[in-house]
Length: 222
Image 1 (tube, rainbow, N blue to C red):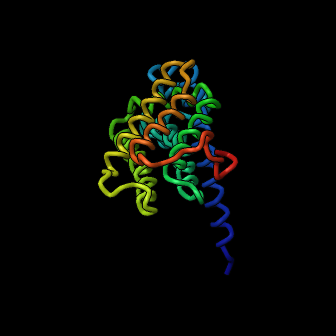
Image 2: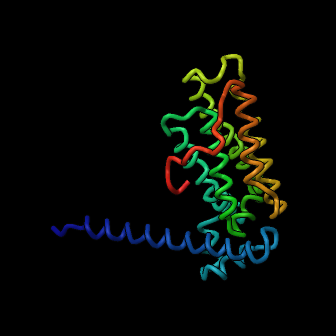
Image 3: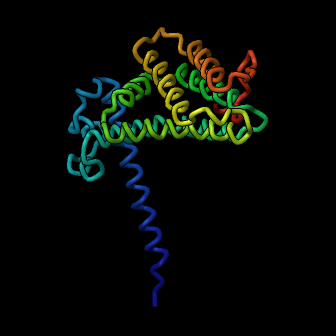
């Protein structure tokens, strides 16, 4: 009897590669269309044309423009969660130093951001898709909350501090600075993020002592 396992596996992997290529082409096309004409003006027909796929194929991959935007925004935000996990795992740092490191890493990202990344930051802020927008904000709050919980376990944050409220304050401040940067290309985001992190750390941990310079990142890409 012939062994079809290799054929099946090869066919399956080939389909997966083709699907990944098509998905990538659609997302790249969406970025180009948005960068050139903005989110509102971009249509599914335009995206299909730039991606060189049929309209039917496009809708087979994404049911709506909102679904495409959600994926683009999620990809754009993924780096933050990689960064916060890296800072949470960094040894020998206080919660205040980790918070300062995250805000500093964000400043580095904003300085390098491309025009399309600036647009996607704006889309995230404006909650293009309200339901997923709420989920993204909650995930951000929980990420900062995890960092604070780590600090409490190390005895750095007093038990009377409401960690949920503190995480929400950090999140709102963080998003506010990024929103100001999105609105004004000349906004001094690096200065504001540094000052905000130091102020927040002092509010939550009054006895915290922060270095004049931010700590070195735990990973060279941060």
